[in-house]
Amino acid sequence: MFLDLTDNSNHSVYSYLVGGISPRPIAWVSTLSSEGVANIAPYSFFTVASCNPPVLSVTQVNPSNNKDKDTLNNLLVTKECVVNIVSHDLIEQMNQSGANYSSEISEFDAANISQTSSQLVHAPSVTDSKIKFECRLREVITISKETGGGKIMLLDVIGINIDDEVLVNGYIDPTRSNTVGKMGGDYFSTTKDKFVLKRPLF
Image 1 (cartoon, rainbow, N blue to C red):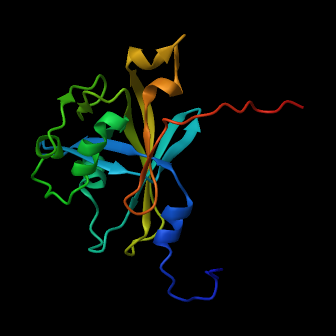
Image 2: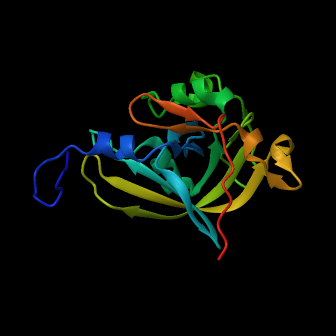
């Protein structure tokens, strides 16, 4: 099968993008609304955009009603968030927080997620997340305002909170963080099975 996306046909490519580009890390983004409601939602269009300066990239795929999600709305007002990394023991709560709650309802309460105060931002952090990136909004780049279009949230990392149990000699040990990834459909992946492949030298 080959899909020619230059022929102006109305191809639905979402399933091919998320099915082919996997596993994807999950940004579990917590924000605080102007009314003080703590929001948290998972995003699997997520990566590191820059290390110097440290910047994360999280993309909102516009829903069918074309209304921005609470995360983006809150970010535009408060300019702050926390990107909590999801480990396997948090997967059920993370999944539940992705339900379509109204903005007046805190997913922390609805999904029974324990929260704790952050160090440098007002948005709360997930207590049991082993790695948390406290961020300030750098920029929002709108790729498209249409349904399925992307709005990229670039986040300046201003603080990193790391559980000592995942550290070895001052570095994050990938065998201890037990993170999960998103695949196509309802599938997720773990990092339980790992192998080492050293980068070649020339």
